[in-house]
Length: 418
Ligand SMILES: *[C@@H]1O[C@H](CO)[C@@H](O)[C@H](O)[C@H]1NC(C)=O
Ligand SMILES: *[C@@H]1O[C@H](CO)[C@@H](O)[C@H](O)[C@H]1NC(C)=O
Ligand SMILES: *[C@@H]1O[C@H](CO)[C@@H](O)[C@H](O)[C@H]1NC(C)=O
Ligand SMILES: *[C@@H]1O[C@H](CO)[C@@H](O)[C@H](O)[C@H]1NC(C)=O
Ligand SMILES: *[C@@H]1O[C@H](CO)[C@@H](O)[C@H](O)[C@H]1NC(C)=O
Image (cartoon, rainbow, N blue to C red; front, side, top):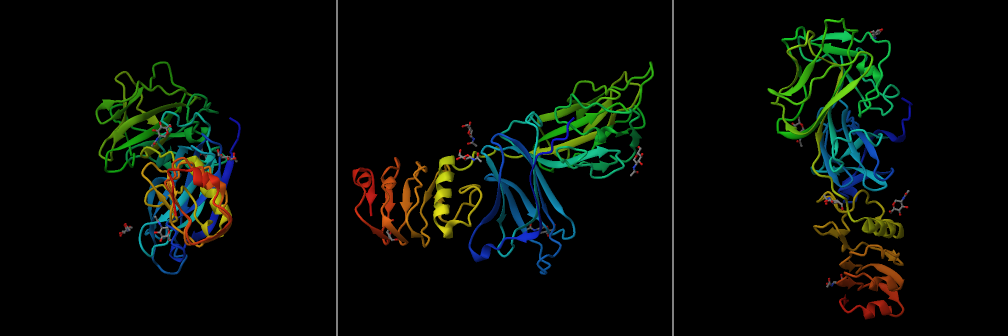
């Protein structure tokens, strides 16, 4: 496997806080250019560490591309909190936001890491959902936090011993080929495993799934740790409670295999385990695993043409520049100076003290209302204002426009001019 970490962005902040009280913004975002349709791994970390001297760790929301991601409660002051999501981006950028949810509690972020994954990885989960990491473990590993450069995608694998009563074994293979597992675990996480003490005893997997039944994705990775003798056989299945959810798993010495569970719902009270087949002479083992919950269905975001048009408006007016992330989503974290209707088409309504000439934002062809009243706009009234097919109200009153009313506006019969 070639090392091909594509590092898109790693930002480390000495805890950067966002003061919303000063400007009334509901969210603060980072927008990072990525390839459209690319699958990315995003890790956001929060280390309160009393950076503001107030001994008052805040709670706030984390969002990406207009989707709710997680509630971040930093009250566990002396611990770094990390959230990791894997998703397919729908545009040629992705934006990660922190949003205020409690008065006086200011969101902050300590680090944001974005990695690009291979297109086929985690492809067993439909791209309308994001994978939200619960646990990723290298079982029996003696080195903790295996990550880049060992894992070219910079996933972090925690060393774990598994449940009480399991034995750690190390792999006797001189090298482990990882060619078939679709999710490309690094060979080092297959270097060790945990096993139960007899074929009669299963391995209970601690999934850390939530209490509430949740759609989840679980990948388990296997590699036989020893060259088996002629009478030996290690064969087992993955179970949810008493139901087998895999075919027989027979790990290969010197190679890796993956068995995953996708498109199922489980909670903390479901027991996920590995149980030996009747004809197995050796107990089950497991080398590494990942557990994710699935997000809700991902939004397509605010209409792309509107996003472009709003960007042009922002370029035109300094006072609008501070707003970032998806303009409308998630509701209610839309930008203050636009109104969004339920099908996510924004309409400009809130007046800011805009001065100067109006930039061409005609790409926002879904606009129904444009209220630019009570500003200090000057120059001629732009012709493009008459070309919006759905525009029903245009309020330009109380500005300093000069010159004639463009013919496009006069011709537009549907429009109520003010
Ligand atoms: C954050 O967690 C702490 C400790 O669990 C809890 O006391 C507090 O109520 C939580 N804050 C919010 C806003 O949920
Ligand atoms: C991203 O997409 C927009 C709209 O499709 C396009 O105008 C812009 O040039 C693209 N940017 C990059 C860097 O590809
Ligand atoms: C981990 O185990 C390997 C052999 O299994 C050993 O060579 C290595 O020194 C161990 N590393 C640590 C940090 O204990
Ligand atoms: C996003 O767009 C796709 C393709 O146009 C559509 O099938 C899907 O339903 C949309 N998703 C949402 C959440 O609106
Ligand atoms: C147009 O703007 C003016 C000034 O803000 C306001 O008084 C008036 O009510 C607006 N008209 C409509 C129909 O919104």
